Length: 251
Image: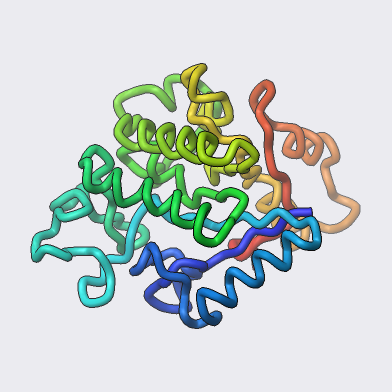
């Protein structure tokens, strides 16, 4: 009863899966016109299907010719300047979430897709990268609170995600938000008024990784049912999760 659409916003090239966004308010021209996108969403609604958009606010394309990077000639217009503004794994630019202009830009973008194209909510991409100054690179998370709330916590990004979820649920109380976090950040799916991030669900990313490993590396009679059960049920108390078998990451 729900679909998630990837690569909606205009992006740099096919190989980035739609994650190097260049024009945040423009539907990707490769797939058709804005009117055709609206028609598709309306058609899905007519069939009783909820439509979520894969929203990329964790970073932006580093392209300066067709994107917002270096729009004013500097390296810190919408993003951090210097090394802090560059994501080494993705070769993209990192937003400066405390600038009022950046908040206006991103929060207006959220409202735009909800009101203009009638999306029912969002899957926030790559938020593990937002939650930590290290972007989670080279780190393994075991669930201990010291791993989440120490000096690596990027409080600026935390506050932006809280603002975004508060705005979404204020504009559209029925909206659904899903956070793509591989680290298991506590309070991700707790309400903002309780001090949480305000997401409705966390994407259970360990599940498809488990299944692809079972299929590629093990035999059918070697499946560890205890491990499978643990992975399928591994979540924080009262945390809503979206379980799935495969995505573009595995395919």
